[in-house]
Length: 149
Image 1 (cartoon, one colour):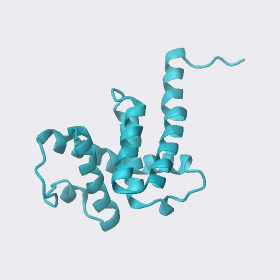
Image 2 (cartoon, one colour):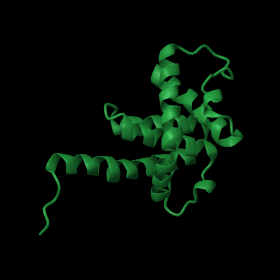
Image 3 (tube, rainbow, N blue to C red):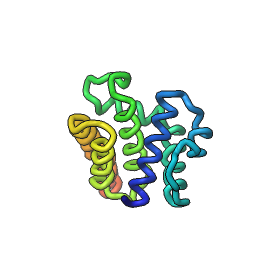
Image 4 (cartoon, one colour):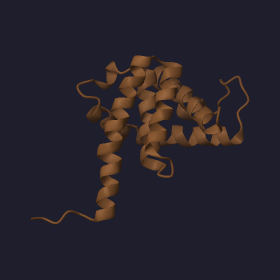
């Protein structure tokens, strides 16, 4: 298991505690609840992800609502919400990571912590988000704004 995958898994478990139990982020990010050894790289990456999600939760949740096609956020399982939040944060803030790699990682986490059906939902939502928000913005940046006709 790569250190990035493990960092994402740890961040997911941390966000789950914050979302479901109401654990304070600073407390959850101490990782004293995690019974395995965590490398500095894994811990730093998990903290980066958790802080990013906590600080941008409202805007990320707005995007999840936009792309979830008639699903209320409350109807999406806590695990799936956390995976979506992590993945959208990565797609927005880690441009050095290829979008399809981030989406695949989200699908793998979903298979690990949820179900195959959930993995399809996660894949579809993130793919739509990536194409309409990330790729579309990259093309606009490369070509410049469209002139008015």
